[in-house]
Image (cartoon, rainbow, N blue to C red; front, side, top):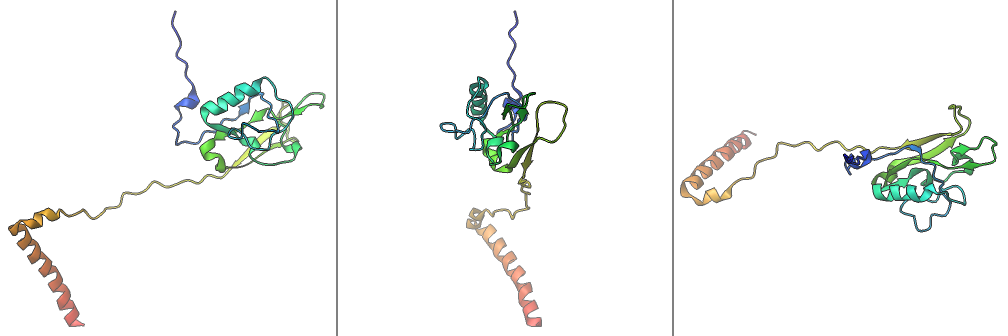
Length: 177
């Protein structure tokens, strides 16, 4: 019997890259973030968590992510992402986790309830502000000089002649002014 190697796509992404995972995690996020401040902000919705919350928090912790939808403050109507068919239950179960390192990139997340997307979930939109850095160009730098060669008499004499010749041209230009 062959054993399958467990492959997780998010683990293959380099740490320097921004990770954004968008999906229906079916995990309620409560308002109280006490003890899990490193995983979420204060913008949660609801009072009672469900059984998926522990799995979701473990995933976030292991992948070094934070819940993007809880980092910004909004009215409750802009937080919930799912409504029951009867309309009595409104919960926040769709999330946009983002790399902890890049959390300042996420400026806003909001649910829009008036958009018809053909299911019982609301449209959840994130606004990002990327700060891209251009790669540093390699400038033709002046090479460092090996001054130990000047300790040799022949090299020192050659250098002094070259030095005097270059500045002699400048002296003639100054005399013309």
